Length: 320
Image (spheres, rainbow, N blue to C red):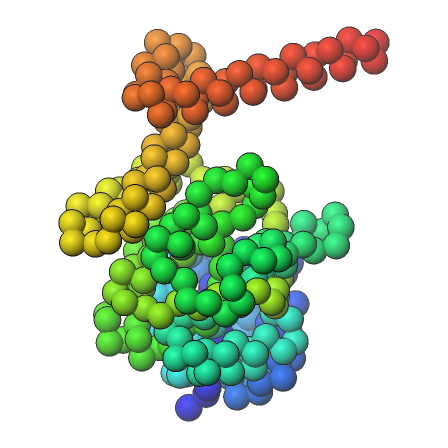
């Protein structure tokens, strides 16, 4: 049996997949299997994956019969994994060469069920930058569910920071003992919901400060294109957890309420934008008045958008 199963869900990833797989193949820890799940791409991704498997016996390919989204593809990979540990890897990202050896060693030393490292955010326009700033939390400290939730709240100083982006090493036996898998209804923030389910089930989740996972930032990614319905489903995740957390600590419930409030705000902003695009101005006004915490956020977003457009108009006038 391999020590680590690297699970790579892939959808229309032909441009990136070979480099992603190569980053797993070149790990200093060699006792691995690499599972590529083609999510009915139809663009040559499956054929590329099959070619990679033919060249390396550690690579296997699962061809999904239909496009089920990233959560469904991850579940296929989790079900097929044989390793003691599961390492999640998106099809357009990459591991630094010594990542798996470092994470497995740290996870064993700390008795972790999940252990994540920092991310290197790579937008291809400059040097990659760590997502988490130096000194945010003690190195390799255990992460509580409340801390994880607060790590997903919007941070104006670091708009690209979200603990839901982390890609932890996961102890496979923990998932099997708890019967945990991804919520396949989610096509946005599915990792966030899955990690929170793990924490709610008692996972010991540790966080390293070292950035060993290269996370590619793309304007056309699912994360960048989340819809109103995506946010509505995420809101339902928070609501379900709130309803089932009566016996939880006040710290956790406060963090969960804060996260739900941030999702409420972003959802209603999307509802307002959708209504404006349809020309339904009364609907947009009504959506912006759904409670003070929503109104203050939406009105601030509208003011910011108006200011940006005014500034753009002034710039164009100056150019002429």
